[in-house]
Image (cartoon, rainbow, N blue to C red; front, top):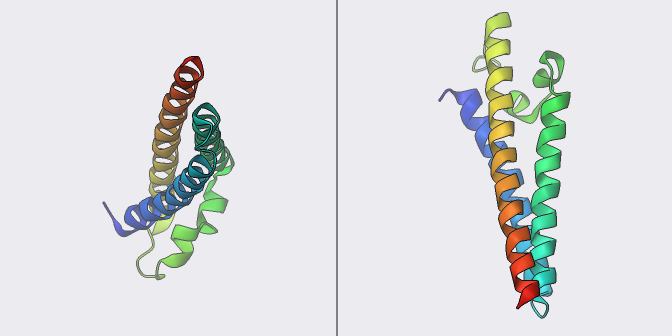
Length: 120
């Protein structure tokens, strides 16, 4: 993985970690009602998935240059030329979709647990 890919991965992972912490805090705060706690955790995961999909849809070659991973890199580390820019865009899009896929899986699992907990 090149330097852009590594920085992009850790940027999205940081966003996912913040969402996970927010979900965990809400779930602990509402632990007196387990179905509601799991529902809130699933809702946060689903919101994170939606944000990742919106970022994917709005991403373009112009916007990749304004993205955080691109701005954090030193100018000599950035991908060079149109092919380098297109490769960085493709790599960032794949990462956004991968994290959205994981977020939707977590949301589905938490919604399922919420449904099961409401029956008990």
